[in-house]
Image (cartoon, chains in turn yellow, orange, brown, red):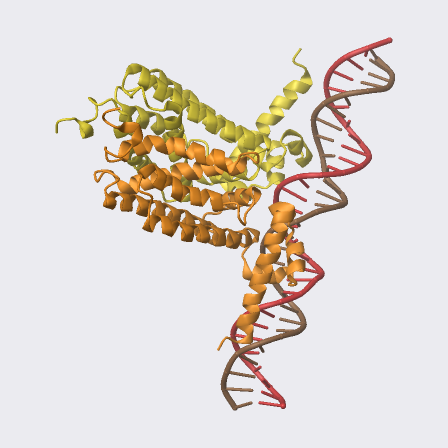
Amino acid sequence: MSGLRARQKADRHRRIIEAAAALFREAGYEGAKIEAIAAQAEVSIGTIYNYYQNKGDILGAIVSMEVNEVLNAGRGVVANPPANVGDALDTLLGIYVEHSLHYLSKEMWRQAMAISTQLPDSPFGQAYTGLDRALTEQIRALVARLQEIGLVRQDIDGPALGELVFNNMNMMFIEFVKRDEAKIPELRAAIRRQNRILVAAIVVCEESGADRRNP
Amino acid sequence: MSGLRARQKADRHRRIIEAAAALFREAGYEGAKIEAIAAQAEVSIGTIYNYYQNKGDILGAIVSMEVNEVLNAGRGVVANPPANVGDALDTLLGIYVEHSLHYLSKEMWRQAMAISTQLPDSPFGQAYTGLDRALTEQIRALVARLQEIGLVRQDIDGPALGELVFNNMNMMFIEFVKRDEAKIPELRAAIRRQNRILVAAIVVCEESGADRRNP
DNA sequence: CATAAAAACAGAATTGACTCAATTTTAGAA
DNA sequence: TTCTAAAATTGAGTCAATTCTGTTTTTATG
């Protein structure tokens, strides 16, 4: 039966995450001292380290929630993509980008990304890599879907294309969170500009206005 | 005249970098304590912080040397590219990738990348962003060169293409340094696979073996 | 309802990056 | 040479993440 211990545990987890999320937002990642998180969550420092291996893992738990929501939202687009390759990509990547600052500030993203490269084998590092892979797979799924529908040429290497699209978006996103003054619409426009090259290459000929056989 | 003070300064810089490089390699970035670096360089802790704002900046100085060498090696390829789009890209990116572990271990790269996203406004963060931009520009220069020669279609958005190629390579490189068991040849092959999609899209029709009109 | 084992907790102690006030060294004027 | 201001060096001290060790709470069992 769900004993007292399990309930207390879940409750403490929640309190720690909530306290951390609030403090990260208020004071930034570095500014949020473990001592303060412990105090706000009404647990001791030792208890926090019993639940999470290090400060980064706490942030990791928050990032996970955010990315999982995004993945969920993306499923709809993959199941029912716009009838145009450029728009399909733009819609999916748009969802990723627009959701990205819901729970996480740019500063939190920077920290999360930093930790995931710094400690790729920590629980968070592995989780983050898993999330990246899941996003890549979702883009690949979209590409496969577009090939099925007949909007993307069959002879294109779908998985490679999906990874290329993800890598490019991700790198642009990294640069985006590194510059505090960068705005989401600019980011989307830049990604679209680059994807246009790909779209022209992979689209079945009749579709794209830019590439008709008889101009 | 080059006074005593200037000479001593240069000498101390050199000693600090050499000590740090040795210790980073031996003990890893975290494992190399500032105290140990100071001892090995025969300066005090305070002096190190007089020369570099923080531990990351010391690593930054080493990364800079590495990337500048790579940029230098790349200039030759841009000036005189192989007469085939796929090979031209592969040669340039190959130089980047093959040089990458000369002075820096994967662990050092991980730390460097992490710091550059964590503190994008620190001296190192800005320098790192500058290096990335320089690499992007070099790829763009190659693309422009290939357009001049007539190997790449004129109507392609060269700068966007260059950035796309760089972003993809860089992201693959990040994943590469995150997995200790990943090997350079695999990395190159994966990058080639993705670039193949692009090459097919941008090449002037007569060139590519994969795309002849009469098979 | 006692009780021993297991799990979780608390917070003092440790560790290591970084700061800062005091001291030493250098450059150059008198 | 001697003196002074500027520049550089030093290392003990500070601060915050993480570890460690005893204590407390929960669970399962007789």
